[in-house]
Image (spheres, rainbow, N blue to C red):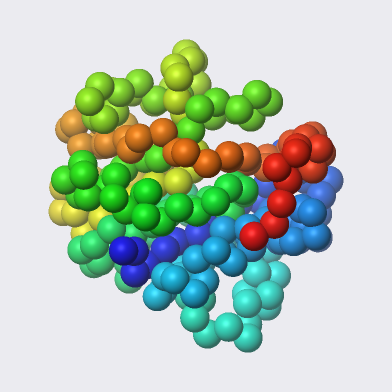
Length: 226
């Protein structure tokens, strides 16, 4: 099972700017709980090491978790979202690392994700797809036999990225050139037939990127906290 998880919480949440003037997107309260906590609460007692990338209003997140020494902060201020793979202590980790965005709300099914990763032969990177949700933009995945052929927002396919992925940092560092952005890294992996996709995620999934999506989530019948 996963020993290490990275939660990406560095974003400014520009499309939520009226709600993130004083705090980062990761700490935006949705249904009475910070967005970041929807995933964090589920893995906190299961995963040994939890890394949190910070950037925009980073001190707010650092202060929020100051009493918990389990969480390790990676400062990615003014860096791209994949910078930490090549420039943090994680770069030498030769094992699967679960990567979660701070803005999704779903059941974190560690067994499903891990078993899919093993069944695909432990690739350098595996994306976890979901079926598109109305009103939520996403990166559509074209694949054949679980090998990703392309990722784009210019055409639609039956699946798109959930934001959940598994990476082997050392494997990536040994085979890929350094990239500061996941889209660039994925493109490089695709060119080498090294980007894989799991089976469709079997749980309800939602992503928060706009004020309207906050409202829509709260109107859902399956709206809950973990």
